[in-house]
Image (tube, rainbow, N blue to C red; front, side, top):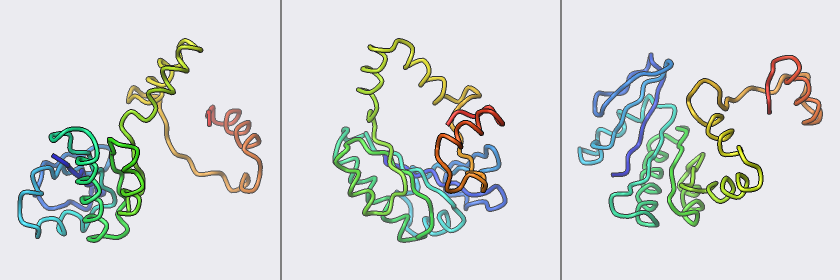
Length: 171
């Protein structure tokens, strides 16, 4: 079933309409079963949420039908709270434009980078291992950092060299 994982800060607890767990100061509520309940539950969940992750429904096959449901859930979330950050999963690249029109802020297309990883690993052994380590939850990974004010308007190369030298970052 299409599900939305709605997150809010730990101090802003959503209603107890779904399975709730906390991690790193955020509260996550799995609302997979909520869609079968009264529509009045959704505003209570979305009211305190800052973000929602909409996972595609693969129970009826992978493709446009599951992506249509994801698009509708995204549209419902954005209509309830326009400033909620919605990240949606798509099975079909063609669905991305519809999800964007529904208000999805970020879209992850299932298998989007498979051909890149396969071809890169074929020509440069080890690329898949590096990608796995960077994208896993094993300590190292990707994280966002604001650009220091003194680098605004400077080149990417200058920022890269300074952050690598001063903080050990790779960007």
